[in-house]
Length: 99
Image 1 (cartoon, rainbow, N blue to C red):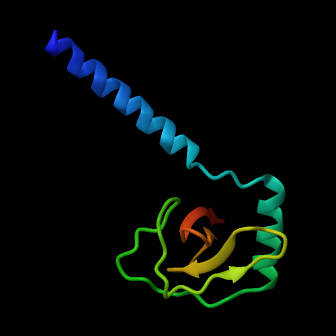
Image 2: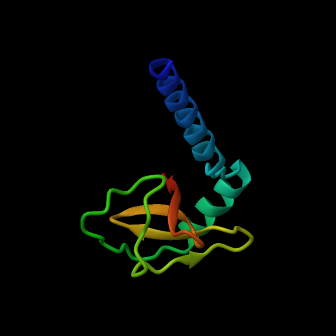
């Protein structure tokens, strides 16, 4: 009985973890993307180099990176390692890499 119970519990724990990760997902609407892209294009800023940072969605930028406000959008932006990124100011996590 123990041998069948352990895989079942492990499976449930894995599924619960996936549910929690999905709840953390940030959705940037197409309207917000347009506003951000236009604003960033009109207000260029210098890139900040952060050694050792693997930049992508979910990455956390250090406090040394100054976040720039975008009017009417709750997220902020910065240019890090020559990539413009949209950042959640509360967690400092990258929510989108802007192309």
